[in-house]
Image 1: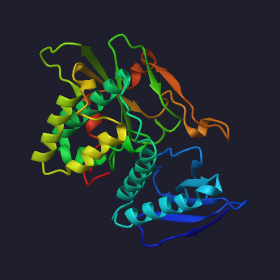
Image 2: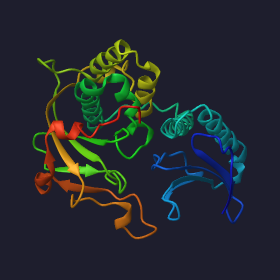
Image 3: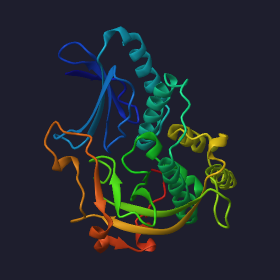
Length: 308
């Protein structure tokens, strides 16, 4: 693999080149693990930690040369957008957003409606963001830290703390973990939100569009960037104007926090053989009782609020 750096002054290192058989490659090198986006079968995307310096590389390799012109345009688009970012965190977010935009461009004709599980998950994230985190650091900081929609390993990533949010029913006994990277790293808190649902309006229950509207208003009053919030919802595939979401009501009943450290049961990339990826597994809730922490302890990890 032969790679050259595009711009040494960029907020993140962007590289380009070709592999041993001449396939075009483009990537970014960062100090923190970037998200793992998806594009199409024409592009192979690999993310790996580089052993010699501990940095991460996200590498895109074009499998079909007939798409060379389009691939070059994609790379140029990412480079031009990232060049405007002042920090590595902002550069990563911008790159992930670009990849999502290109993927959506080719799927624009397909109308996407969130499944019930996805709706509960989004409601849990919004409630944790604006009803819990927002009270501590404000809506603007919360939206800046909301990186899950862009493919980041945890839903919320701040300087000193990462939060992965999982929704559950009152009868749920296990949590689904999406990959070997989702609970990998330090300063991670697993946030378990019990969500109640109803097909009719009840006291304290709100639809997703209602909650999104309230969250957006809170962000506006805080002087935050509404475009960033709208973009996150778009990346998830949620259209608050779609009537499909008008008759499902939700309420966050309770929160449980777990400190993901030490002997917490988890599978990480270091635990699996080289060449394996895409690991999904379930954590029995009764097995992590000893790792419960209170809300103040969970939120006290956020010592710095200078963005993600």
